[in-house]
Image 1 (tube, rainbow, N blue to C red):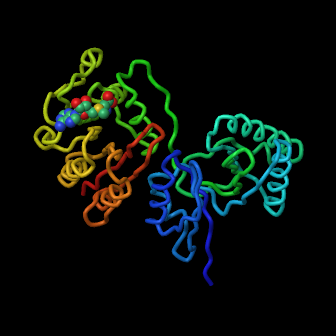
Image 2 (image 1 turned 135 degrees about the horizontal axis):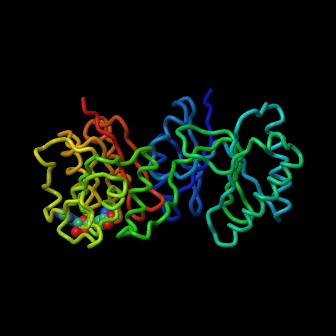
Image 3 (image 1 turned 60 degrees about the vertical axis):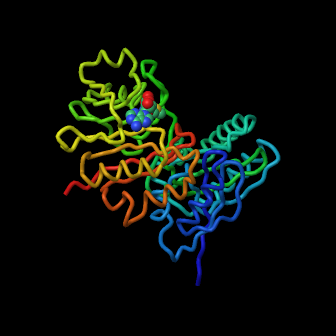
Length: 345
Ligand SMILES: C[S@@+](CC[C@H](N)C(=O)[O-])C[C@H]1O[C@@H](n2cnc3c(N)ncnc32)[C@H](O)[C@@H]1O
């Protein structure tokens, strides 16, 4: 018997068609979509959904087998959501932390309404099931599998999808540092969160296309030594750090000093993805870096073709890496970020 499952997936608004194509590439079929979301279907016999979706680029949050509900008022939604939750958990023993998260496609008036619904729902839950409510944590943590909880996503003020299983892909808004020379700083900081690791004191970072210096600043701030390669200028303040060396050279032909493996390669050059791919492959194949964070500009390219090339098991980067992540970050615009750790032996 063929068993299929629906998955509700959110993405940045404007990227629904691209997300649908990425889902199809991962053997989902896309059923319908709206602003910032896609409803997809998978045949479960092809394997666990967790495993197949874990390393996708465009999803922000996935809800497993969601219910589609409709409401006419805040109270009406709160009542419906309380009864769904109580009904779903009545046969369960909840004895450890569980998560809840209510969100929306971000349409202005929806955000406040969703907050109100979430607060009233939780207040009601506390009154009716205080022991269960005490174990609740707000938010959906980044994880590589579906987590148990209560997750509601409003696609407009009258309709929502509800599920007891959600998976978050780790994108998050980072806090700007007033001393950072550019907003690009936020991207590299977010990338460390997705990788679960960032540069450490004493490590060496080569930053290709470094100016004005947001990524370089982020590494310097952590005590790393940075070789910043860019024909353009770094900010004056950055040049006061003793552990930065600015080389006005062509980043595309640059290689590490004495061809020795460095701890980190950063690359944030505005160039065609094929060119960046060739550059990074050269670094990874020659084992010139342990870890890398690379931003691909996909505004004038087809992002799905770029992803297919990067992920190609024979000619791409994955087989050369022991850790590999690809994401459209919260702070990415028409860009995607590839992060990894190279297999050295
Ligand atoms: C998007 S900016 C980098 C921003 C930087 N990551 C930051 O955090 O401030 C791209 C940089 O790449 C540099 N660039 C582009 N092509 C280059 C090349 N072939 N060699 C060196 N630098 C290059 C540009 O001069 C520009 O400063």
